[in-house]
Every structure is written in C-alpha cells, then in structure tokens.
Length: 127
Image (cartoon, rainbow, N blue to C red; front, side, top):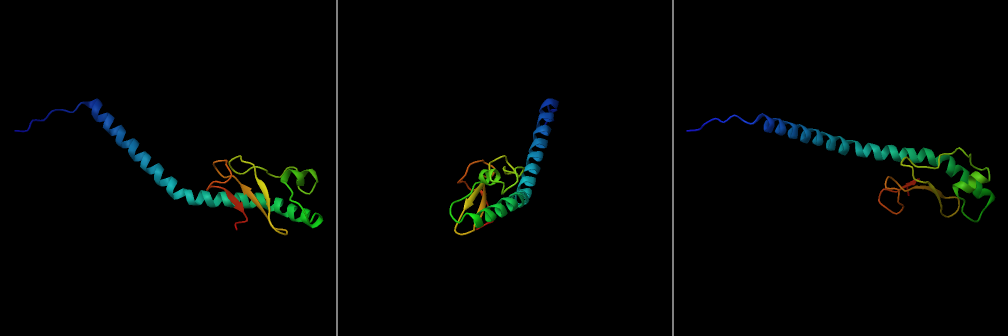
C-alpha cells in the first residue's frame, strides 16, 4: 500500500526556484550563442570606421615620408590627423597603426581581452 505524504512547502518552493533559475540560465546562454557572431561583426565594423581616417592620414604621411612608420600620436602631433580622432577600440584598448611595405597600413585592436597577440585581436583591413 502506497501512502501519500505531503511535501514540505519550503522544499517545493526551492525546487521551483531552482528550475526557474536553470531555465533563465539556459535562455541566457542561448541568447549569447546566437548574438555572439553579430557582436563580432559589429566590432569589426566599429574598427573599420575608426580605421578610415587613421589609414588615410598614414597614406598621406607616406607620400611625404617614404621611409619610416608613423604612429597615431605622431600623425596627430604633425597635424596630419585630427586630434579628436578616436584612439580606443570598443573595449577601451589602444589602437595601433601597423606599417607594411609601400603605403600599406593596418589598424590593430587588442580586442576584448586587451592583450595583443591573442585570438580576439582585430586587424583592419583584414589580410
């Protein structure tokens, strides 16, 4: 014979709360997994917008200076680049100008972790 024993109301409430929190956690993880590619694309686009004036100023600088590599600060000090140009990436890291052969330049962001040389670094234009 099976006998029914009433469940402790506090225990039942704790189980309901636990299940609710687990459900909310699952939904949050799903949202992050779906949104992550979009965020990465948005960050690439942000770097591209920040890079435009810097890369244009670097190419202009190269026309007058066939040797050497400018810095963003140097371009500002020389008046080739506006002093109000954005020098930080979306995470507050410092953007860097990287020189290649000829008039090829890239803008480098240390990415979300703030450290250069890691997988989340962003180089614009992509190579």
